[in-house]
Image (cartoon, rainbow, N blue to C red; front, side, top):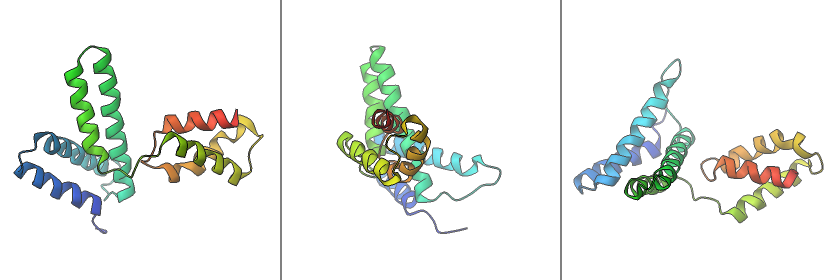
Length: 155
């Protein structure tokens, strides 16, 4: 086995702390997240140890699921359930890199387009730009928001 993920260690020890503190929200959320990480580790043909980067992807998608569920619950008039989902998303956010602001996303997209020299190529360049942006935004911004911005700037 390779190096244990520091992030996974932190999630595990924070879970223990939350359980001792009887912090139900944090302990149940961390338990679910650790389960998602374990599932990701055994999902492929052979089990693998996830890197911190892989774990950030799992965390980002777990947080996104919570935010989407919260919107659905709120639309259905179930604010208490929406609040619970948002609270869980908040716990997960503690372990994600700082999120980029809309202005930072706009600037990052603009600089990436300039860097690649693809302005004026329109939508043809979309894949190239998204590919170059992926490592820069990993876990730090919603992919949908970023691709909308790329589309707007390449438009």
